[in-house]
Amino acid sequence: MIEEPAAVLTVTMVAEATGYSVQQVRDLERLGVLAAAIRASNGYRQFAPDHVRDLHAYRDLAYAVGPVEARHVLRAIRSLPLTDAAALVCDLPARLNQEREQALAARVALHAISAEAATDTAPVAADAMTITELSRALGLRASTLRFWEQAGLITPDRVPTRSGSARRYQPAAIHHARITTALRAAGYGITDIQRTLTAIRELRDVSHSLAALDDRLHTIAQRQLALLRAVATIGQIIRDGESS
Image (cartoon, rainbow, N blue to C red):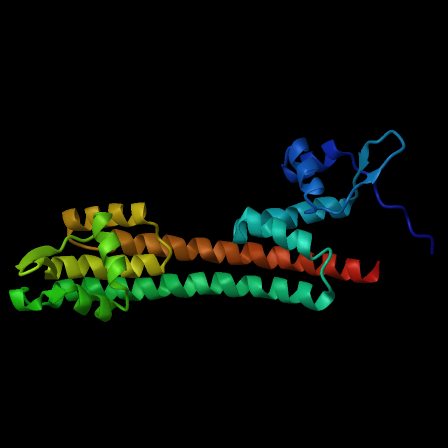
């Protein structure tokens, strides 16, 4: 049986088929994300259907793990030995699973904090903590609490001492520190946490934070699906490299 020659695609055809610009296609080939195109006698690039396939995989992978990591992976698998290339790809789902676990843990923490707000008795002065007590309770360094204070996330009282003053965290500050810990574990940045705490101070609940975590979990699920699509193609790229 005579094997039919692969279709020859111009860079414009590849761009139209994938939604990338002509320059982006050229750049991704130059960066090694795509296999090098064959050069015609006139110097023009000649692409194949596999290039379109690989660009779709790159788009999914970039959505799943970020464009920098996606470029690194697609470059590396073309040069690494089979065992190393397979290990690199198999590590990708673990990172997304870790993000999901962090978001789930943060959601559980926020649920607990929300429940406490509805059932706790009125706070008293004896509930206050020193910076050492609070850092130990949260599993943080004292320097982290001081940084959060500088960022306006938590506001301890200042108690006079012989050498100056000491931080004293009242129940409200402890509450905010626990919310901050939960959101940081889920990957939220300082600016997002500032907005969250502002809303909590005004609304006195964390329902919007729980909704935000639900949105994050949904996004992670979409990224996981995109990763599964990309990995199928990446496996084919690795097999092609082994057989060539």
